[in-house]
Image (cartoon, rainbow, N blue to C red; front, side):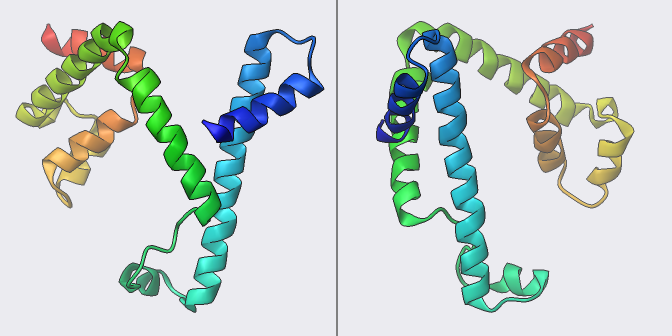
Length: 156
């Protein structure tokens, strides 16, 4: 993972006496900042080059305007591949992954079957959108602890 390695080497040189965890965290923060800054800057460039002026023009534009630069996109793909191999698909983490999948699935299934259990603001959104999309959006905004607590309440 060259993107992370680049920042970690910088942190090693700059903060050699710091604990490994702090160097890791700082390197990760800097890598993510690099990704976000590049996405913003490259998107601004693409929007300017496209000539779009309105939101409707953005929506109708034939290509995606929000993109990373080619260099950063390559590093992002490397990071993603590494994370899938080393983290998301790692055998030691499988029990947690399966637990999370079960919790999200059970919560989703319950809320689709009982939309009245959604907060009022989400119930209102059902009138203008598909129920499954509204439930997905609601779940996507939850923290791990929140969804676990909610599922316990829903099971009662």
